[in-house]
Length: 383
Ligand SMILES: [Zn+2]
Image (tube, rainbow, N blue to C red; front, side, top):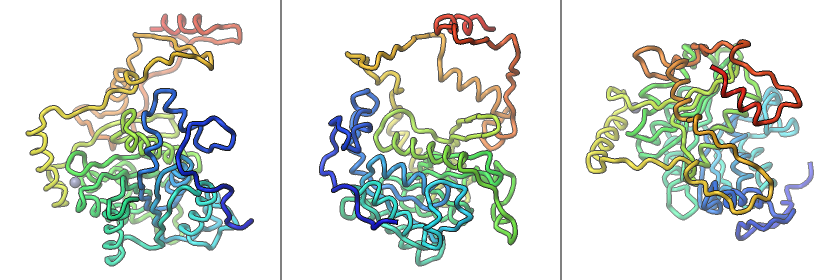
């Protein structure tokens, strides 16, 4: 491997200039396309990632390539050859700590990003206090808190530690996980007091029905796929970008079932009987807040925010169809396939199979001569 010399100098200001040497031109084009108003603000944000496994390492790479201001990376593991079925780490990094190996790669990819790394286990008492202090003071500007905490860990204790720190600091965080058989995963956006915390309903454990603590037994090996990990990492990074830059809608709880290519969505309300007292306290203060602010501001759906472009340099045509209401469609999917009757909890969703059967009556045949309008008409005529 060559020396760790960056391939370019730092870039002072993110520009939209369309030249081959600008690493941000494709990202800044999101502004021109009307998706994000303020892309360059990504440089003001600090994201803390706990766990650099199959999800966390990929999220770190994505955020680095997106030009995030600062990343704080925490992990106590070393890179092993047994990790090579996943993305990001390379065989020659085996034996290095994951934090050192990640920093080495990421600094090369984007020298504009600031990195802070800790090679420790957040669940020990001393480390927990330091970890909490870094959430509170690790932001880019001196003594400001980080913008968002991402939990990419694989065990109950670490999830509980992140939950505890974020409840104590009233800090939003996103939790993520992939099932031990590698075919499902989820992300969850936890807003203390407003949505369920990890201890209100621990989704991964309930979803799998297996106590995670039993998974780490000697000789017991959880399965993992780079595909499932990559998809969940993509879901987590996408929602991080939406949250930080304020576009679209941030998912509260988003699942992924690989066998059915099914993405259930839900919101879990906080449990008034949560075992965590900080959670109960924050739930009460959120109720107070709602009393004083009776109409919570809901983000405008992105479809209404997109202004039609005056020019159409790519010749892309949008076909309007007022019969399709995505929200309604999602609601129907959830109602039909996802929720056990009388219970809106998310945990059982992986067990339910779609009720729609694919057959000749509800499919259309497509050959290379079929044009888009014909296809739309055929689809409209389906029952
Ligand atoms: Zn709770």
